[in-house]
Length: 234
Image (cartoon, rainbow, N blue to C red):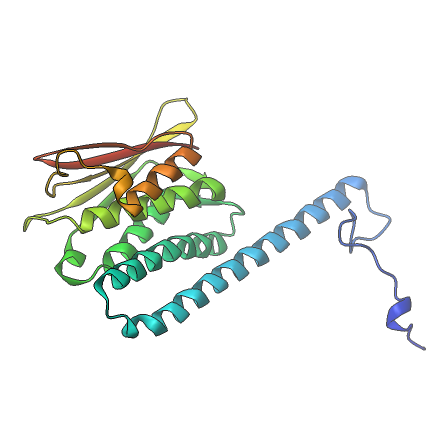
C-alpha cells in the first residue's frame, strides 16, 4: 500500500484535547489522556532541568583549580552551593515522579549534606541534624526555601565553632494556618554587636527570598549561638 507523504499525514495540534486518542472516546477519557500527556511533558522538562544544572556544575568544577584569589574562591564555592540546591530539588522531583511537590524533610537533609560536604577544612565535619514534620512542598516554595537554607547553613559553617559545634534544623507546621516554620540554630560564636545582615551577600539574599515566601527573616544571636527562622506556605 502506498504511504502518504509526510506533509499529507493527519496531524492533531498538541494543544488539542484528545491528541493521540481515538475520536470515539468520551470527553472524560480524552481529558484524562490529555492530563497524562501534560504530566509526561512536565516530567521531561524536570529531567532536562536536572541534567542542565548538573552540566553547569560539572563545567564550573573544571575551573575550580584555576581560582587562586581567596575572595574569588569564596564566591565560587557559594555559587556552587546555590546551583547544587536547585539541582538536588529537580533531581528529587524527577525521582519521586510526584509532579511539582517534594518531601521537604528529604530535600532539606540532602541539601544540608551537600552544603557540609562542599565546605573546605575541618568545618565540613560539623554535624548538621534535620528534624522535619512530614510536609510535601511545592516547587515554587521549595526553590526559595532551599536557597535560604543553603545560605543560612553556609553562614553557620563559616562561624568559628567550638570543638563540639553543631547545627540543628527544624521544620514545624503552624497549626491550621497553612504555613510552616523553618528554624536554623547553631552553637557557634554570637554575631558581632550591631551586625548588619545587609552587609553580607548571602544573608541579604536570604532576606529577599524570605519576602517571596511572605515573611521576614528573623535572627537572634547571643553567647549560646545564633538562631534564624522564617515561615513559608504549605
